[in-house]
Image (tube, rainbow, N blue to C red; front, top):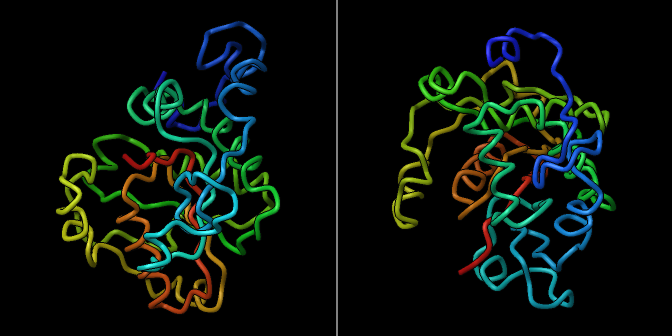
Length: 235
């Protein structure tokens, strides 16, 4: 099955809900959609973290120390049962549910400024070889088509391998990802003066996305918006 998906064979659309298993002819049933994705909770406009009140446009951390990125669009918090969707795509090779992620992100992005170019958080060559695909890019492809925005998977390159951020203590994540990205020469004109949308599956501390945005800004990007399916809540 995985070989067929990676070789470009047609992907069968899920006929049952990816969360509850109810057969409804779609990847997400109406009940799960309403329960887990319909309500739009107040979020920081910059980092996407949940806020207690919609009166605050930014969280305290983003006010005190603004990150390199300018905005974050989030479809849901990373927690049960939504985390099952992320794990199914990332580690269960369920590439056929990536269009569902794109659909829910499109819903979350309503009213937001549309980026001029999309890219996905790149994997290092070794990690890509191990996994066989980049889950962020699998989400970005259908999202690009729905937004009618150009997708450039090679806008940013990871020029050195890093440890998995999820395996590191928060204090070590900044050091691990620092200077990990570069904009290739062929992509510089595409970045300069543009609003870039960066797609990823999960945002935890934001260190990877911040480093990527800082790289894009150094190469002349005017604005960087994170477009992430799930955001880990503050503890």
